[in-house]
Length: 264
Image 1 (cartoon, one colour):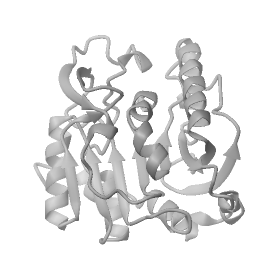
Image 2 (image 1 turned 60 degrees about the vertical axis):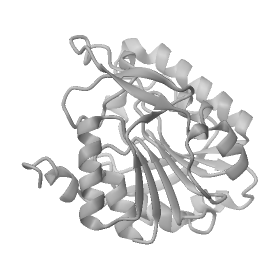
Image 3 (image 1 turned 135 degrees about the vertical axis):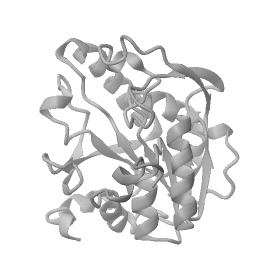
């Protein structure tokens, strides 16, 4: 249990990503899962336990979290390939900011929570575009998960060639503002994301999660844009999205199947 540090991972409640994979298998190649922002293995544990045949690629720049990610994979003998760096729009060093060794909210964009990192100096990590990573034989329509605490736009910009060629279904967390004063900046980031998704010819779907636990999927809604003027504390269960290629003609039907999906 690594002095108790793995307890929160190994004893976590079953999340909603396995449910999503069950719903998405009609539309995507769910044999391959690329996880950008893997932390210490929460998503890996969920999706690889759901289907032990999944080929999993995980990216995590926080060294302590990456060490536990490796241990979780080795202990469970998952079919994983793990990379100890972040994904972004260029090959360059960036500073990462965190409040603890295993901080799941660690970020390279400290301005999303400026009061949280006011006394945190950060440390340097490596960042590479996904397009520059030699992942062999990525299938068309693979699942790409992005959970990067504010740098979603940079990750997408660094993966444009891969997205255009492979048309993955993307699971992405897009946070609301941390406080009222950050709303303008948060809304501006969301508009930039909308623009790049429009360029990629992708449609946006909101995953509505249970408000209390944020681990159960209640509904999937087709939306035209990200909600604006939102503070995270008032709506923490509306930050998870599916970005789907528009050429999947019947993908919208998933919204009709979503009533009661938490019981699937």
